[in-house]
Image 1: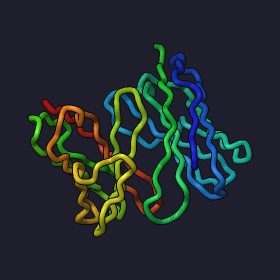
Image 2: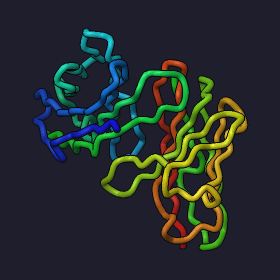
Image 3: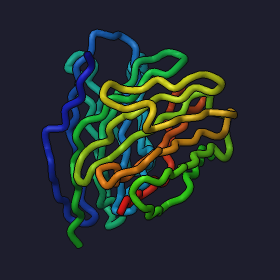
Length: 116
Length: 114
């Protein structure tokens, strides 16, 4: 069974600084997707970034980037120039590649606070 | 793009009544939708997977007769909580999966059963 581990229940960052959220996963599959979702106080889950395991290049979306280390099964999220609106729960998630109803496996989340 | 709506956002009902929650993909077709439940300060717990035109697949421990799911079209899935009780009070979230196999989430429904 696949598992996703987020070892940092809470983190904080100063506004405008950079923070990295950790995520490790366990799988025997060779092809899969990894995601970071953000859940602000409104509780709306928002897709932050997506990585396909077969791609060696790390995904980036504006101030958000990942460090994907396939051999180490590590998928960390780096937030640059942190803003107050980045304060939220961040969930790392994994999914097997393939058409159909493969479910997401979520980590337990990391609560990020941004200090003005 | 990739917007998912959920209605209602808030519902309060009496014990014993049924509540229907709608999940719609607004700008894409979704053959697969998912229903989650989230307890305070916890991650999402998958309840069931809904495929258009077929029966939903329920996770272990989820009562299919209590949580009725219908996926009648490529843009709409509904979750009906039948004979709701206070222990069913929770935050329910749906998601819709696009062709790129990415799930996009609705804004959630807060259910309070009195």
